[in-house]
Structures are given as C-alpha cells and as structure tokens.
Length: 214
Image (cartoon, rainbow, N blue to C red; front, side, top):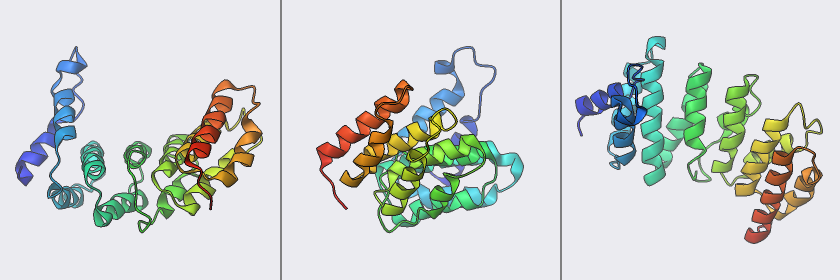
C-alpha cells in the first residue's frame, strides 16, 4: 500500500452519517480493512500524514491515523513509533482525539524503555473522558510509575465521587499489579458498589495467579 492508497483508506474511515446499517457502511468496511493491515512500513507514512494534517479541521483524520497506528503496533511493537504515538498526547488538545489515542495505548504491551509520563499525566486530567481512558491505559506498561498512578485512584475513599476512576484503576492493576498491591485493593472488596467490589476481587485474583513481587 502506498501513501495515496493509505490516505484514501483513512478518508473512507470517516463517519458515514447516511448509512442505515453500520455493517454495510463504507466507514465500517474501511475500519475492518484497517484492522487487517500488518505492514510496519506504513508507520513512517502515518507519521508523515499526521505532520501534513495538523490543522484542527483534520481531527477526525488524525484519530483514524491513530487507530491504524495502534493496530499496527499491536501486531509488531516498535519502540521508536510507540514513543512517537505516546508523545502525541503532549501535542493533541481535543479530548476526543486524546481519548482515541489512549484507548489504543490500552491495548498495547509497551516495553519498559518507552516513557509513559504523558499517559500518567493524562490520568489526572480534569476532563473525565481523557482521565478515564488514561487510567485504563496504565495497564499497557508493567512499570512502577504506571502502577503508582493506578494506586493513586485505588486509594480514593469517596467511592461515589470516584467510582469510574477506581474501577479503571482496579482493572489496570488486574494487568500490572504486584503482590504488594493486594492490601490496597482489599480496601474495596467490601464496597457497596458492585463494579468496584468485583473489579477489586478480580485484580487480587489475577495478581495472586501471577505471583509477582516488586
């Protein structure tokens, strides 16, 4: 696939508001085709397209580019492009675009040498959409800073105010937590909010299965 073909696919991924059946829409088909891409040589092309479409009017196009980048990185992790992907969190400002990047990051297994500081920063963002996606994305990196960022939300005592944050943090520790986190997670095992209780119990069970320690 050359750059022109790639751009055509990205344009087809834009929302098709006239489609009566999403499964038959051009956009839906384009997303499924994008998910099938597996050539890591497309990554530098995608970076070029981002640079060429930095205008605020091209937010949807960039979101589609991030979708493709995430899909490619899931199949073949490349530290250089993964770091580029994460670094875009410091450039994009739209909450929907930021959330789309973070949702892709959550599905990756990120090497330890990749700097996750911007994801951690987003986990305290004042916009809930960004914050929730970022807390969920902490699971992508088995690093102490990401665990500590998740612990911050697990420590919150006000379960009603921080319900979703605690649930996402529990889910991240389900993936990256260590034995030392069990005592903290136990704070929520008797919660009156079922999703908080269940996510804490599931995280504890997952950590015990791994048997990891710091």
